[in-house]
Image (tube, helix red, strand yellow):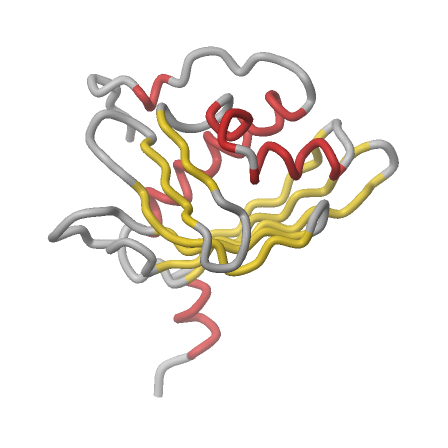
Length: 157
């Protein structure tokens, strides 16, 4: 009999970081298109309300598409995630990203959980390391600089 908890853990990416900014600032960076684009993406269309669009163009080859499930100001955002178009291993809206924010002194503890990654889990783990680090920089008022992942010639791994 399979170990259900282990199987689910194999499909999940979890990132926890401290951001030197209060939840009210960090929340804007995960719900407002222009702010999101400072740390991830070349085009972003966010409508943070249940059923609202989550659309992200991170580079010249992919479009990530989903919808918002939940948006609790300064506390929590949940949206679906996957790749637009036919034939992707992670189809549009097939996975779930949950981001929680907790006040910690003058900063924020951010916890990102990306669930249901039956494929491409390692690639998403690698990608979220990169993008959560960029979010920390942007939300704390600094410039993360150009995103090398947005360049189609960039190769990782």
